[in-house]
Image (cartoon, rainbow, N blue to C red; front, side):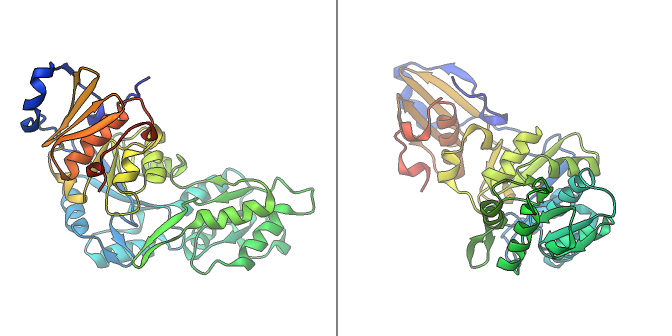
Length: 363
């Protein structure tokens, strides 16, 4: 069964005879509308989208400032190591105009779950940094770092200083004496990796996995790709037409799809063309852009033409032919070629490993 795709990747069927195929190399799809059309709130991830490490990514700041002239922009992050105020200060230093309430963090979403799970003012074992401690404290809970204080729950988030001793305390509390094995355990996020200025580093998912190995169960997760953090954002800003921008298929895009909002994958962070082409249905973005400048440009429509034994998919200056399980590039390059290749693969109804994919699509 061919999957139904969101937005511009929904195929528009036409028929093409074999005699028409040779003329396809010069065909361009009709220009689409702006990615931002009808959007009242832009949610953007941070690491890999706005900055990498302490440094802004090219074109990110100027593009977001342009968008902020006509739309609300909010910053949604799984990073639990910093407070919303410190994130806002960093973004302001980069040249954006941001106040703490513009920042939606996974600790905020985790604390919202915590409030529904334990009594007000309870003792909470916190594994994480200032961002998580700040939100737990602001919510009126008592923060402890020791399982000996009989915490009512464990809440876990990433911080560079988290080590074995902290993970062990979480395991001690969650294992208990056998009578308290159902102690609530909430994780801010389970990102396996974090983009840093020097490369890609292990994320909170690796730390959660260590505790999971010790206690034999999984936590409730608040951050992307879970819906809780998106609910926090949409409720806070009262949005009815939001757009999510991210660099990760398994968190940003999957979370947006689960929350029923369109998404943009920007190729400045973790996931690149190979991951896009192989994306499972639940992790496919509505739009794909090289960098954030693509948000301000007309987005080309996707057209699929039926041919004998397959299809030709056209996006902008690119055309990708599929006959059976073999894909070939008829024309195009750059981001339009990736868009056309993605649509051709996603609409084929075949898994990526069942197709012959030319290297031009992912190199």
